[in-house]
Length: 131
Image (tube, rainbow, N blue to C red; front, side):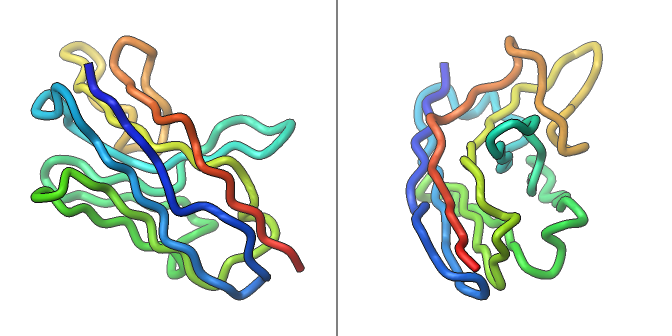
């Protein structure tokens, strides 16, 4: 099992910045890819940014140039730096840790949520951006 705890969300005005953190613990050496997803009310969960064990990073087009994903392996922590925030960035942000499926490969690197046996999720942290 892997445990994930997010922090750093909050309310900011448009143009502001936030840094989200995701602390991971447990069976972490089984993890292939980690990332940030978000879900706004009435919308599906969408991938925002992911990073795999080879350091390959993927960003959603809507956040390219504004968000930066990084990780500190010594601290077992994943980060998401969010700059130039827009009202449409408002959502619950979730941290994902993915185990690699031996049959279908990684969903995470494609900014897709993996099937439940292969994905661990945090409880989420709310980001609200006002205009």
